[in-house]
Structures are given as structure tokens and as C-alpha cells.
Length: 471
Image 1 (tube, one colour):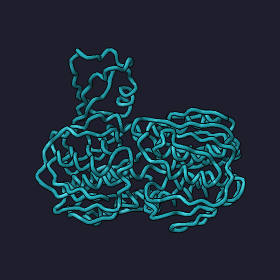
Image 2 (cartoon, helix red, strand yellow; image 1 turned 120 degrees about the vertical axis):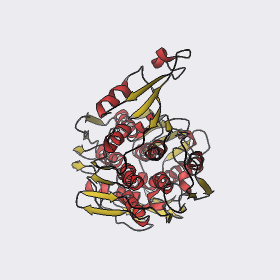
Image 3 (cartoon, helix red, strand yellow; image 1 turned 60 degrees about the vertical axis):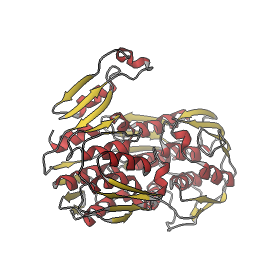
């Protein structure tokens, strides 16, 4: 069972029944299913303040199919929105990050119909003509949305403003704004510190040559790549410095190719983008490989066997390489055309540069708690600029569990020690919540604060985890 604590969030009129003075109520949810969690999640009178993770049977054996990839869904939405004709996106993710993208595109004049139970989006492309000449768009804390939409807005004619949460207003975007400036677009940070809110004053994308830094986020390059076919003249993009998260750029190019724009791939560029139009199509979205990492980790941590359906080693998503890390730690990995299975074995510490799969750092860090020696993760300095500082704050929470953690500028070293339960902060970061919860499968008394932050990319994570482990 997963124990769920409910309490008030003062100052929110939607939760007036739970204002200060009311006692805390603890629920125990047995036999949790998706419907129960969805209904409680949407109720304005019930707020999940914390979740205590129950110990899992060991070993855990099961099969699961995670929801659609956030990274693919948002890229496909951009290409479909700009395309000529209608697109059907099958297996699309329904989460805060994708809802933010859909809402913003609708505000820019794109018609999108959603069949949520079927995970299908119908998008009527605008043919590269953005009808809205003014928009003020709330992007929450979705980095993909603000970066992709800022570039997309450059195609339009008008004034577009993008803003979000307090953390969003701390996340860097100046490198993208500089790239747009080189292509003839006035795009500025409203605060003057190189972070959102962003204002784009567009009169079409002029085109030409631009250089974009690659060491903070690959999303700057991806946003420019997807918008570039609609410039007034052809675009060539060069990358300055090391390009982080390189597989995500390959993913961008693959999605563009499926919608009819073929850009030659290279390790660092330059990328020559031809002028043209995306074509509407039926596009099937893979399950999210980053989300799959949590279930692969369940097998590793419990010595069990977990199969993730819908993914293979040939996935578009680089994060399937997370299983290579587990293999190096001692796990057995099997795969076929439509699934990957991890079998847990005694774990040993490793040294791993995770630059290419940085969204799975937190997952590996929790697995490292149960290894026989230290694990060093390197190459992910850019993780400090995500939803939270995913190096410094991760170190804080792992230490609460009893681990010895040495923090580096570009990563951390985790040395296993006797573990203890603790209430763990999530910093409004979905990946902190999902990864740290895994520790509770082996360590009694692990409580996850603010579990609803998983709605950003995986609203039903905790019910899916409960179902997998048989709770």
C-alpha cells in the first residue's frame, strides 16, 4: 500500500475546506488503480501533501508500458502545428508539460482536438502562418515549451510574451535569444538577466547563419532547428562549445524527418536546414524512455525482473541507454523489437559520464545506494539549470537517507552506507519525486513530499508503481 497524507495549502481558495486549524488527515490507499488516483488528483478538496512508500516484495516481477514520451510529444506538436494539413499524434502524453504546449499553440491560432482516453491529438497545421499577432502565454516550468515556442513565435508577425513559474524565471534562455537575434528577430529577456519572461517581437524569421551555444541545453538548438524551414532564406546553424544531451538533437531531427524536412545529422554541426513545409501525417509516439528508467531501476534495486513494453534498443530516445548503466552495474538486460527487460543482479559501483542521458541521473543515483561500492556520475553540469539543481539538491536528499555524497561541479560520487528512512523534498521537480520514491521500496520510512509534482510528465506514476510492485 501507499500511504498518502492530505493537508491544506493555505491561501488557495480552491482548497478553502482545508485552511489552517483543520487537522491533518492520513489516508491509506490499498489496491490503488489509475482511476482512483486521477479522481483524487482532480478533486479540489483533496491535496496529496506527501506519500510514504511501502516496502516492496523482493524480487519485483512484472510488465509495464509507460505513457508517451514528453520529448517526442512536444516536438511532434511543433512540427504538426507548422505543417500543411492535418496530423494525428497517436500515443501522445497527457501531462502538465504537454498541456502547456497545447494551450499555447491554441492561443497562437492552432486548432488541436484531444481525445484524452485514447491518447490521441488531432492537429490542423497552419502551414507556417501564425494567425495570432499578439499573445501572452503562461508556460509553467516547461523548459521544452518555452524554448520551442520562443523559436516558433519568430516565424509570426507580432508581439509574443512567454512567462511561467518562479523557477522558470531562473532558467537560462539567453543563448536562444542570441541565436534568434542573429537570424533577424528581436527577442529579449524582460528582466534583463537572460531568463524568462521572454518577449519576441517578430516580423518573420529572416534566416542566414547563426551560432548557438550547446553547453547549457540542447533545446536551444532544437527550437531553432524546428523553426528554421520557415525562414525567408535558408538557415545554417553552428554549435559553439560542447553540445550537451546530444541524443535529443538526434531526436529532433528524426521527428522533423517524419514530417517531411530532412536535415543532415552531424556530431556538432553545422546544420544546414532547407526551406520547406512540414507535411501533416499520422505519427505514433513511443513510451517515455526517461520514465521507463524508474521501472528498470525497480528490477535493479529489488533483484527482480521488469519488462518495459513499447521500447527497444533502437528507440528514438537516447535515454534507453540507461539500461547500459545498469548492465555495467551487474544487471542482465534482454531486449527484442518491442520490449526491454532488466533482471536485477548484485550491484557494483561504476563511473559513468551521463552527459547524453542526463535526465536519468537521479534514477542511477538512487540505484547506486544499493551497490557494493561508490558510483561516480560526471558530465552533467547542465543539470544544475533544470527544474531544480539536480546535482546539489540531489546530494542533499541522498544524504538524508544516510549515503555519503561528494558533490562535483559536473556530477557527484555516491558511496553506499547503512540507509534510513527520511522525508525527502522534491523541489517541485518531477524527477526528484519519481527517483527518490524508489529508495522506499527497500528502505522503510521513506516519505516523498509534494508527490503531485509528477503531474509535470507522469500524472499516474505512483499508481503505476504500486501496480507494478503488487501493492
